[in-house]
Length: 101
Image (tube, rainbow, N blue to C red; front, top):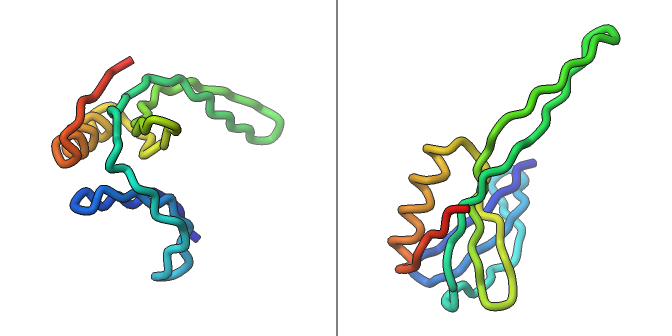
């Protein structure tokens, strides 16, 4: 089972999906009224334990959001270079701006 977000920039549609094998279930959402994209820096904690020895690490991740007039859609989470590159490509295709916070 896989999940993710599909973006059709030609038709300005977005789909949050869950996939089983080659079939992807989800509902297409019209994003033609996109306001802007936003990249947010976030700290995530990761925990690991082996034989009662615990360890927690904090890592920095970046989240790319698409803002519509009435909702916010999380498009991706990842490392800085990956998210910034994808954000630039998506903003160019949708002809919108990116805010970085």
